[in-house]
Length: 267
Image (cartoon, rainbow, N blue to C red; front, top):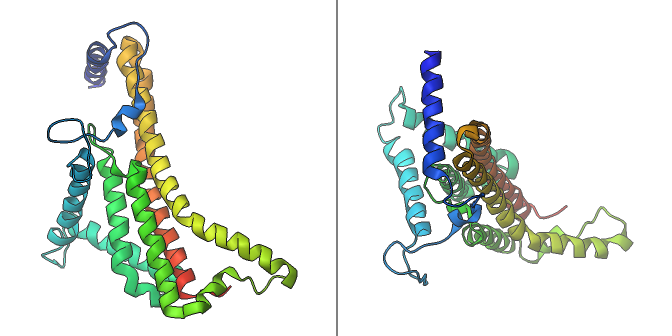
């Protein structure tokens, strides 16, 4: 059995060396090409209403979420199926996060936070499928998600507390002379929040996929020695699976932290 596995692996290495080897001497690896936005139907021009690969994979993420949360749990069986178990685990996980981080009064915002988490984590995992497109690697996508969170939380703060929401920027426990300086720092850090959310998510996803592409290029160019980058790809792919979940978790838990500030603005 071990010999069969060895010969199969060797054959795959040889095939990859023949198929993916560059036409000219040297390495020709372009790791950023995988992030290009391309129209699905005719031409190269991308306009405001052009259906692109981003559109397709965002739609697939929505379909996957619907299949898991709606169709997968529609039977509501006492002994749940695998899909129902995953849906229930996701529901309980996010509900507990919202309640623990932002408080019980934040539970009314649970549907939005649940939707946010499921979209990000599903898009991240779909992006790990070979030949797919990772929508969360684009700042245009993560930027919109971050701005929507920022605006929604800011509006919520002012609607619930009015001018008292500005107490978030006034550190009353600090010495009086330092309070104006700290207020400026708090204001700056508050408006940096959407930038931080956007860059953290897209940057980590983009970097991981670029590294995978580089190792894949090495595997295609090295021929017999490609088992080395293939081993690295295997290990790094496992890490990317973890990163895909962690980045969705970080984005969501930071949203809960910011929501807590909107519900309880005083320091």
